[in-house]
Image (cartoon, rainbow, N blue to C red; front, side, top):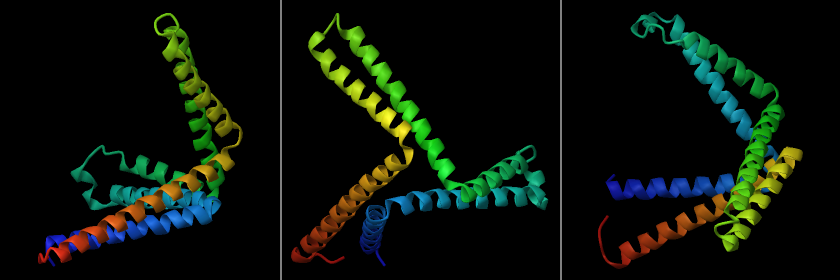
Length: 184
């Protein structure tokens, strides 16, 4: 298999993955959030277990003081907690996101007020964007589960658009290649 054939196959697989994940996100946004947390939890659990085993293996002396036992235990416990309580993890993440948006909005409003003396016409745009960011932060903070669903839904739409764009691009390149008589 030559490079171009391999590249086309990889592009096709990636575009189809985008489409399938995007459709999953759009049709089942609540389930998608849970699946994302569980996949991350499984990854943490697996990496934690590997680090614990690595610590007790005979190779541990190749890398002394690597803290693989402590790191492995922390990752394994985090993975178990995430599997047991995925909604808590989602809530924590969205509280952090809401707080970051609120802080960003406050800083933008402050900057807009500081700019009042220098550029009054541009202050209004920055003030409006800062207030919008602040309002979005409050919404995320007060209603993390609906926000998570909306974010996953929008991400799904973007993945579908990206996958469709990749497919159209791939098939356009294939048509040009075939019509120009080039060999792969």
